[in-house]
Length: 346
Image (cartoon, rainbow, N blue to C red; front, side, top):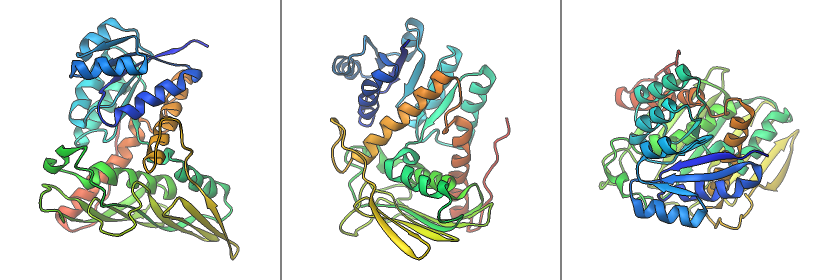
């Protein structure tokens, strides 16, 4: 098997999960060739710990010196456009951490650049690859409980996300763009595209500049309705962090995902209960293991897509459909009306 040379840009807090994943995927053809971070000490340490052959503090130098088969950009969103355009100029297939961009225009610019150059571009949207969400998808795809008509999808926590990401205090956009984008993506996956979005936001923590809570309602093209919720200011105990909880009602049954990674499926008047917890990998730990394991699953999906010469499920074009819901939610909150999401046209 010919290995795919991986370059990773950004060696910070969450990028460690990417680094662990690429090391795990060596047997599937991944070879971590280089890492890059604007902090030279952090780049050097990551290279030593995860076995990268070389490290850089300048992305331009990395692309000039390396022959990469895939680059994984795990930096903050304000750096994404410049790095994606750099990767595209070097014709390197590219994965970008979510949020894809700070706004619609920057997301479109990246997708346009990749499309014009014919370069693979995907977004590391990992919630849909979490083991519990994959199990929900399997049940829906089986047709055993019919088509979804209503859903509630929620990520509600009071976990101190500001401790490891203090820049959250001063972001202009927060809850919807950071975690709401995940649950909006799940709404698309489970119920199809949305025709309109209504949203109310709140700033419950006075130390935070932007919204820390959002309650959204989507009318889907097929007629289904979903309520999508996110907050970093929940006071409910026990705190289910970092689990996504949901209820989906279909024409012949229902699915409920409860705290503790328990799924109940009602079909033909009977309910079955199952454990849908993610496996503990050698480098994962509770309660983070569901999110950590999904990073590995997402990376494996991206690697397989690049090696097969096909688009990823979460391509840049696909992610713009989710990003359009984010933009519609912010517009709805500002105007007090339901908003139809934008449509990307190449």
